Length: 199
Image 1: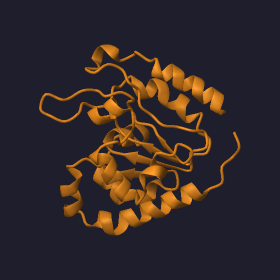
Image 2 (image 1 turned 180 degrees about the vertical axis):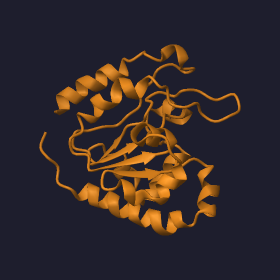
Image 3 (image 1 turned 90 degrees about the vertical axis):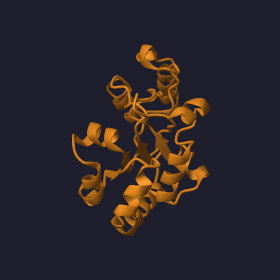
Image 4 (image 1 turned 135 degrees about the vertical axis):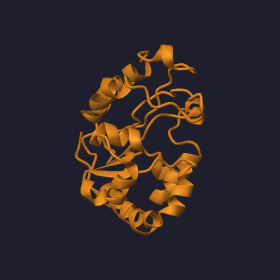
């Protein structure tokens, strides 16, 4: 585990074409990692703005997520603190009825464990949305998991996906703002305060 081995892994990921035939905009893997990161954010897959810029959560959903975390952009995008590793690294395209397609199924089994092996300092993983939660925890309902977030601590903290649709869900579920967000911010702060093991 070192910067050199992680850099070599990232080079292989950036050259990946496993899903190329299924990606309407072509492969452009997007993730942000360092062996010293203490918080891991596992989400679903890049949207079009992320594909264009190569910066994870560089869109309205990122603004909502950062507001949930009470975290500024400089901290959020500091890979020495926060690792951003979606379940699918490339933009998967749009569904016929609207909305983004699910992350490509090939991606996480191909790369996820190898990436996580290079992140020895992770203290807390945020499982953002159904795809990340189902992959890590098995099938279940996002709302139930978020409501019972304490059952998954200290390793995981399940969250809804911070899309524009979640605004209506938040208004219908005031417990999310009253109970979940204060606990989330506390757990994130504690994770980032943990000392880093030399790599």
